[in-house]
Image (tube, rainbow over all chains, first blue to last red; front, side):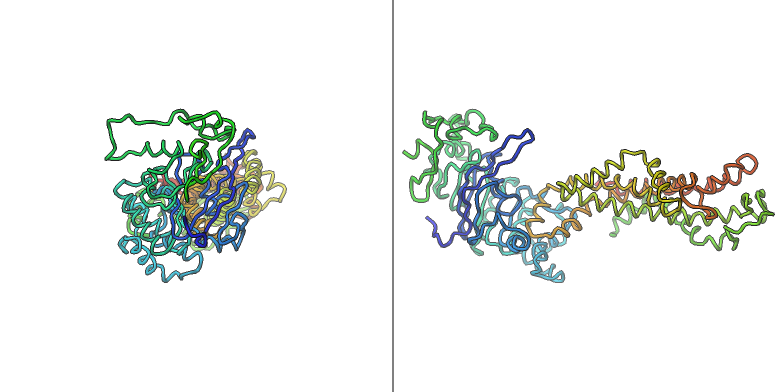
Length: 320
Length: 277
């Protein structure tokens, strides 16, 4: 579906286990394989605690996987250290979820957006004012905001500042950890438009974490659905609601509220709780909540199988 | 400092009053040679020993015939200088170790904090006496002794303040944007701890002065003939009934200075209290 020569980042068999205090292991990511392409957005969707943020933190070296490799320009970033790691940080940046906590309250906006540039000696401190203005205008904020403090700005404005900080170094890849979930729906839309515009102009690859399948459908080129640390479905973003076939993806889609939805129908909720990540089921991770569960699901874990070009599903029923 | 901050300081009457008093005490220490009228605080004439306060000796003389008025004035120098050195020392060491401990965590944290725990496990002054006793009695050793038992308080405070922000998004964001470890400590961790620690240091000045005087009183600090208030109290102890002025004036000096610096610290805390931000 995408041109393989545009491949930017490839995660292979990435697993992360956290030891708990009582000596057991919590599996947050289980054998995750994903590919990120230049200029494209890969959305990762799943409920809270499914391991999507844990996975994305590997990209920006805030954590390292227990097993597996992540290749960036052919180099395994999980093994990088010291100067090499520092050099590579400028290619991969991140926008955090909550714009009210992602800035140092004691720093001015201009210091915040220019900090990455100063860290890599791209500009000198005398150029900060001009550069900050330029970056703010890039994210459609008035240049005068440069002298403000973060607490004097609204959530949407702050998230634009966060985007300005992330693109300051002109990275090739940006991780957006639920970058719009703390915003109003109307503001969400304009921020998404900004992100897609910048992506087109600068050919940035984006890894966008969300729990709203409806939102991600509107702009992601490719969507991965994650459940209990496993990728259960990877599909093209466009027309996602028509083609998604994993029972969990469908359930997620049904949970999206929409003004145009049919309110006479009963809202279907997913039954039961996800199994504990401390004690993963032997078969399909979704088997205890799946409405279409067959005998096989309890015993063998389904693997990701291609059902259509660019569409992979890990489900015994769908694959048939 | 911008106009709003300046207004906040100046509109606090207590702060202004006690700042003025503190400055007066500091000026007394600076101009002790002038104010004492040129009387050497260490020169004694045994013919003048234990004289009541009168025209020539405003506060009387001690058992060696030294002028107590002059000694109290010069004592302000010793007390203030040694207290400020002590507070600065404890502040710098405690903050540095606490910030490093909180930021790096792991074994660095474990080592620093276990040492701090060991120090805290002893009653402060008793350990200070033991240390001063081992190192030998002098003002420098008294400062070292008290510094050794007080830094853990600052280290623990700095560490807890660092831990409070260590796992926030803006710290992670700074790491992701390539900030060096040095920058993280200097621009992120330190500014978030400094206000609280400055307040603590300011309120501790009085207490530290008391502890230094206490060590001197017990004979572990300043040695005769140095004019130090605690040591003067000790010397006057034998003459408490026959020559009370030997204890009254240095005692009064300690009292005034400690109260002024305590109140100054308290008012500073009211102004800077981060909880009100």
